[in-house]
Image: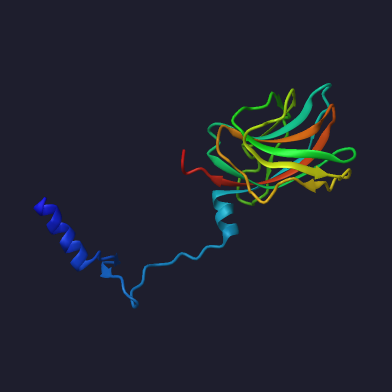
Length: 194
């Protein structure tokens, strides 16, 4: 115990000495600061991806659902920037995070738009007719959308959902047997945690 106490006393009395280039850090020898533009960082570590027009088809006696899915091994974390939806008339939508992949692969190519990055994203888009809407993981409940044109209305609430690999974000309509459309924009970041 005496040795540990001695080291602690030295640390408290002498402090921690930071060095920059072998010289103590001071006002005349500060630690370096890396000034980076966020768009440069996103361009090097992921990008901005656009999911073009996708339709969740009407399914008899089912709730339409569309899903942005981050596949296992993608090496990315997705941040949902825009979810713009529209359908016929006024309808209610919700967003729900999930770790259950929907059944129908839309085969939509998710386009990565940052130059210098591969053009195709690993993100996938699925649809399915649900017997019941999600009751857990809801992050944007009951958003009323009156849009019927391709500009749509945003259903992404104040929360910006992040999707890790093997997880997804469902967009679910509250009306049975009704198709809906969506445009989605996501940011992609390198996944340094998995």
